[in-house]
Length: 213
Image 1 (cartoon, helix red, strand yellow):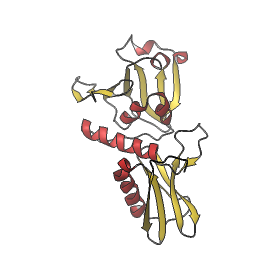
Image 2: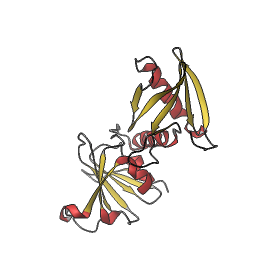
Image 3: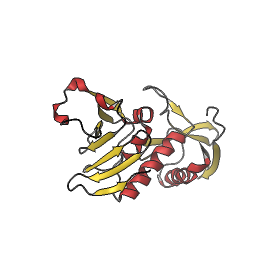
């Protein structure tokens, strides 16, 4: 588990197995949701059993006789990230996406953490982002990121002006953008460097959510 002293270990029984989940105390409600998912998944606890909640999996890793830790992909690592039993980033993303979808008043359509997001290269250094979404497909979140306010018609951008990244890479590029990823097609999310500033319905310009500031 690394050396994050802020983590609290929650130890629970699921059937005849002992599960340990490690996360900061402020994410305890999300921990409880993962525990409930394992209890309701219909599979007996075993090494490799997983539940998919939001954008990523929570997986059992056996550590002893009927003892397991819950791990997630190592979202803070490289593309070949392995796994970690520090659930902080996985739970934060899950809780943040669910919360924003509720505030906006829509049903979430989460991508997987590995689905690609297309970013206009000019947005990488811009203080404001406009995020729009097409219907998702296998391997493609449907999300496109450009600058906000818009400089010009994005249709004029060529392939060389764009970069594709896994959705989880947004944790390193602009963490607040991860919060909007479960919003459905049909909205524009305006994301600042440290905040989600607005969510707007594309069809009529209605502001569905107005900022964190």
